[in-house]
Length: 556
Image (cartoon, rainbow, N blue to C red):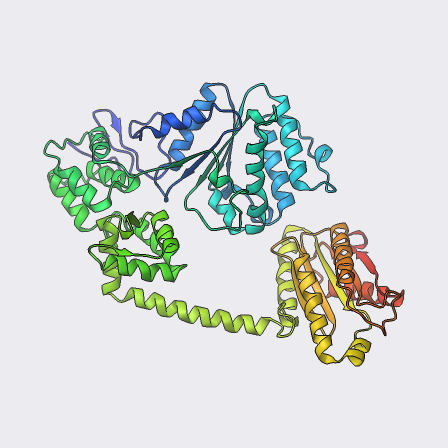
């Protein structure tokens, strides 16, 4: 008889049934091999400098396969470092230098090697080169291959500046392994749920080298095998057929149905077939076993309303429709559609029933209207916060952003820097060349300043008139001073003629004041603004075209 144990895993004839929420354990009888995928992965991991790329929609078994690759490596005495980017602090993911130091520190820690990061890190040669040199140092200390797995790479795509530097570096390691004896010890395994378009050239991307593995849906034979492992007999094949019709062989959805088939209420004396029909009849409803999965898919689509509307058209068509390639690719990568020739069709009846239900209830149109309102509100908010002339944030946004960063950094005890910039003798420039030329000069200066920033949290804003400000979260006084010098030189490279300038070069120049502080709760952000303003005044008073810095971390 089939029983439950007060919410605990149920047992039948000594077997424990696992709820299919986490990766399938190594010793589990419920892992289904998908030949020749496992064998290809084991063979590839033996190759010097190899790269394996595992890509599939969510809950398709990527982590389960990754566990088996790592176990195979350990059986062969390989060193293993398993990195999950979901465990990385947001502040590190938005700063390339911090992220690469974290990466190196974790690898060294997992290898039980002493940390010598500061000995090998050199800002003059850059963090990417430093990271590569440090990795070679670690590889030189070990006597067996090293597998580094990067799970949930897609999490990094939300930070394009770091992704755009880190991922090409992985590609360079793979290519360097052809000549470097140290790098030949390295094997990389990257796992990501859906491929996101990021600004990487094909010859820089690690997503077109090595062994690509895309996990397929289960076949009817594999579903029948899995049912047997749940001690479900399906002699006539109807159970497997009905289940495949509903969920299309999706591993997680299949396992969830089988789990609920064998773990039932004590008083449920229905046949296995009747229980399955009840599960399938309620599959797309809020009370069905797939409700959470369906809500998660809908939440993803709500962020991309254009895909939601395309999916509606596919759902309402019985034969499938032609879809613009990028949209088809995105929907397929979510597991919602499959492509047959040039036609996109719904991947399984579960999605058809669910999204058809949403259409009939008018929820699709509701989301579409909400998206339009959100777009209008975002445009209005942007207009309220952007300076019309320079197209950088305005004074209002400057103070709002600085206050938020101040609160955040005071809680964390982290440093923040501010640069105030003044275009030298700008009134004389306007009087000499006219206001149109003055406006064009301001636009060019703001553009150069914006292009000089390194981190997504850094912003340039128009402070007023010819003054601009730069907020630099998590930036030391020395780093801010270096950036200010780069900007000062870049402005001079514009060679905007200013015959009436009081500066010797007779071109547009900047005077700058830099202030840095670790925010405290008993003072507010205007303290930092005042210090930067005083430093700027000193620069102007001492002859202009120069930088003065105040490091308040020393005085406070």
